[in-house]
Picture 1 (tube, rainbow, N blue to C red):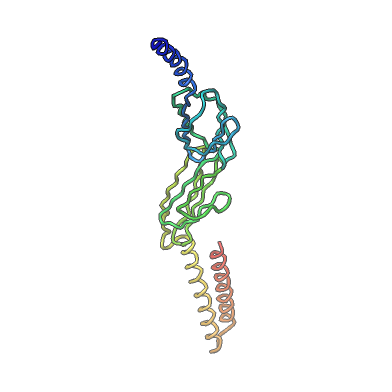
Picture 2: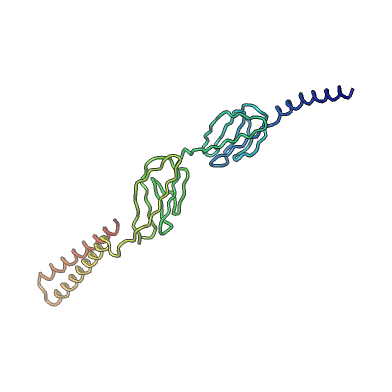
Length: 229
């Protein structure tokens, strides 16, 4: 009788153990770069990446990864095996490029078609393409930097510029100094000629006076024009 009970238990274990093993869960781990990607399994949302040690029944599943920022997604099939861990690692490539700009000194205005901001600047949503980059410091002591750059899809472009200081006397400054001196000289000439005419000068003094006034006025006009440009 005891032997019969032993055999019954033995055969029951033979039936139960395989069934229990076959029904044990598998494990799913999903890691992405960047993190924060929405994870859907058979059209059911199960969390954001990184998703660690998610227990699932064995079988085939449709895994969907959704980037909530770029509104892009990818779908693939995964197979979960009983008692095993399935690891999915994905790099979600951006549809945009990234631009990082720094300058010495800081606080320079960065422009591409329009003003993007001031250095140090970081923009992760640049449409891929070729651009003309302008870096201009608000202080007039520095030259602006202009360069052509290419921003590839899914890549980071780093720009680091040391802005050159302007010469103490650049061409514009020299021109304004010369015109200023010319204006001053013309008006001095007009005053001197007028003084001579008051003391019995001839028509030549009057002509010299007008020449001085006209020359001074032209120099003043030139001074303002150069300053405008």
